[in-house]
Length: 144
Length: 149
Image (cartoon, rainbow over all chains, first blue to last red; front, side, top):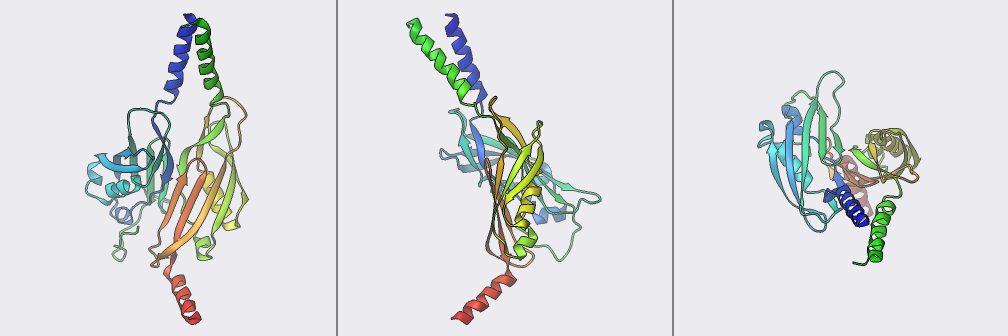
């Protein structure tokens, strides 16, 4: 019986090692929306992704967002981006939901100018930063 | 259950545990996007750049060296690879240096100053960077097409 107990412990441990059900296999970069950079909009958006059997995202829903990102380009940019990701099932778990946290931040101060940068930290943190830009009346167009 | 039969089960579970992650590999832990290199886009250079990454014990990139590709693309790919971080998957065995494959594609047209570039990472090692071509060059090709007709 000792042997049996040890077997069960080992089996439980191995199941625990793959506790997460899905892992991302296609990560799609996101550019800080130009309009949001000009307006100085920043914030955090949490998005729930529902993953279909083939690993694609079939629907997304905004779970949490800062008041500042509300009704703005940031939340919708995150939603549009999340739809393009792909996932791989790594265990036959019971959840098809995956939550991504998008953090939009504007780099300020000397030497902060520069293009938008995208960083994804496994397993679910997305950082999008862009250099501060003074508002220009001529460039009101939303750069995609 | 006969003891002998259970013994076999136990052996299989142990073997699975040991054998599945036998090869230790560096897996991306932090992915950084990159834009299409502006000079390469102006010169309409497309293609593939392959970067060999050597990873330090903490998972940060110690060295990134392009092994093939156009110099302009190689430079952008190397710079990008240095910003990545890796983590070790598997628990034992020999550790291989990861390779990152960057595919640069020019596709579509755009109005000057409003050109879209996209970056898609297919894990574990393929990065596809796509960009639109500025309109000026598109107009030029239209003119040549008309001449041909």
